[in-house]
Length: 343
Image 1 (tube, helix red, strand yellow):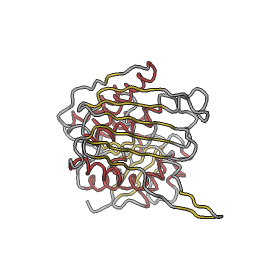
Image 2: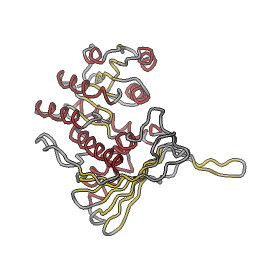
Image 3: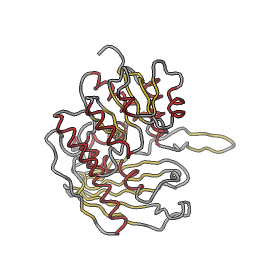
Image 4: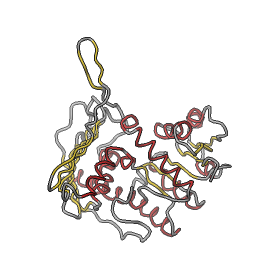
């Protein structure tokens, strides 16, 4: 393929608008051919200044727009299943933001639909697999230099949560990143989860259980704990420490800009995920474009999206019951590789 890949972007909100900017200004080998969003004004604003783009309120119309060869789905999670199935029906490669589908039943339908095609079409947007620090940690663990991993200690903090955020969303929206990262780093499926509820922070909106503490068990006997705190008030922080038989390794402490003024010094703290993981998003989309132009599909697939949905649902049940909850996955289709598939 010599011409730029024509991409339809579904969803022009916070994430979608950032991907439209990325495809237009950062990524090479692609162009924005169509944008769809129910809010036509938002779609037009996101596509403003981009030559040759068409704007629709209907996702199906964008998929059928002239010059569309691939799809980037950045619409709200409940719209993902229909969009994915629509792309499959047209044979269009897809990069779908997480959650692939919010509920495990719908996620399994997507896995099965792709399996019936006999080939992969979808990459799921677990962008931490493209972060330089996470990739460094994955490489280290894969070498075996530190022995077998025994535990992962994870921290995930946000400045504040959106008005619509619920207690369940701390698990199925936020911790879903740690779920995928743990499966990928360890190469193991998660088999059980227990979610504990410390007293809620005074900074949390009324009725929101925040922070939470999730403990995951893996099929290989490792443990993964996650502190999720979405109204910490001071910054966006993501850390992960792998404790192994012969040593440990921690990521997320990379130094940022230090500002010195008025007799003091302070470090800048990222305020949201689009800042902290900007490079990872760039790498992810560039990798997807490059592979698509070569007729390949790489990265986390629909099975990874399904597994994350199943584990997250078990986590929400544990949050509600206070009990350890097992994870039950459907049989894996032959189309998909092992737990936490590459990269």
